[in-house]
Length: 127
Picture (cartoon, rainbow, N blue to C red):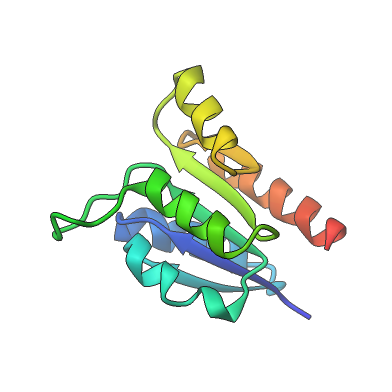
C-alpha cells in the first residue's frame, strides 16, 4: 500500500517541487493543499504523514497559521506523522512546533527535500 502524504504549503512552486521530489519513486500518494483549512477538510482520508508549512499566508483574515493548523490536526489525529517546514532557523520556533505535536522540524534549505525523503522512509518502516 502506498504511503499517503499531504503537503500543506501556500507557495505553489515550492509545493509542486516537493511533490515531484517525493513522488519520483512511485511509492507515495501525495495531495497538495495551499491552505490549512483545505487540509483539515480532508483529514477523514487518514494520511500517514502531513508536511506542514509553519507560516501559511491566506487571503482570509481569519485563516489560521501553520501552528494553529498543527494543533487542530493533533486534536483530530494523534497518530499522523507531522513534519513542519519553515525558513525560521531559531531554536525556539522548532521547539514550539515539537511541543505542539510535530514529530520533525525541517528548515527550508538546500537539504530540506533529502531530509524529508529520509523521514518519509523512516515513517514507512514504522507504519
